[in-house]
Image (cartoon, rainbow, N blue to C red; front, side, top):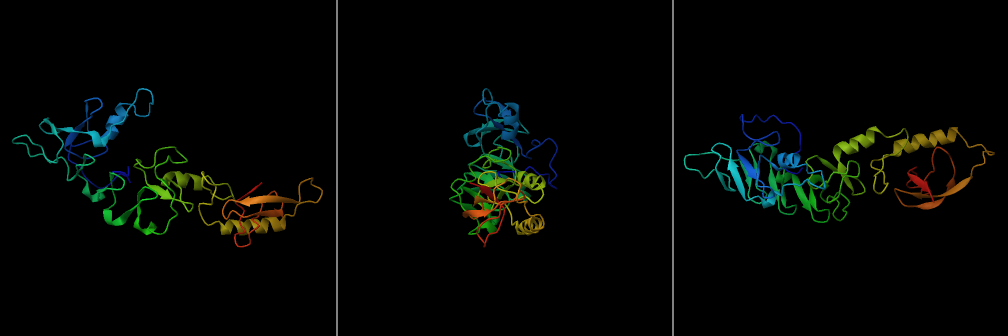
Length: 269
């Protein structure tokens, strides 16, 4: 995730050091309003960053000065206080590119040159995908479908920007991305015997073969009446394998004409 995953940890911070977001020994001087804040999240909350008219956000890379949390000396960005007699170390982890300080090194923060920002989780556990434009877990190397700039989009569920989000993200089978918790919400709200699909491209998010088998049995037990006034056959497009063809109509679902697919994630065309 980006700097923080937003989840509580076992780290015990020193009293009066930092904010609810980070344990650190200095406040950032915001270049946009020349005010002091412990972190960019504190700034953005105070300045109503969600307000597109009057709100604004803190550019972490533009910060030039910090204020020591112990002696209150305003000074250029560095890891240690430059005041004589003050031994304050602003953060066990310090990134001079992102102007990022954090005492909680158990989160294994690291700077990704490709992303241009600091992330957590340990450099050894991630790789940067140039096509998708973001860091992914190493198990996804050569094991995910690339989409140009897929992480530089908003989550299709909550509309928060994925690249700068501190919430954990998931890469779907189709290559699109969304927040882990948003994906869980989609799975929880899934109607019975209906596939969970990507909100962007309608491809199935998971293997639905068990649901397709159940639908096969339901349809076999419930034949359509001949005098129902409904079409006997319709042309469908499968959202998963993209096959098209004529299939028998049934109110429970329209089976993909591709025998190797056989799913019901289809739509009439």
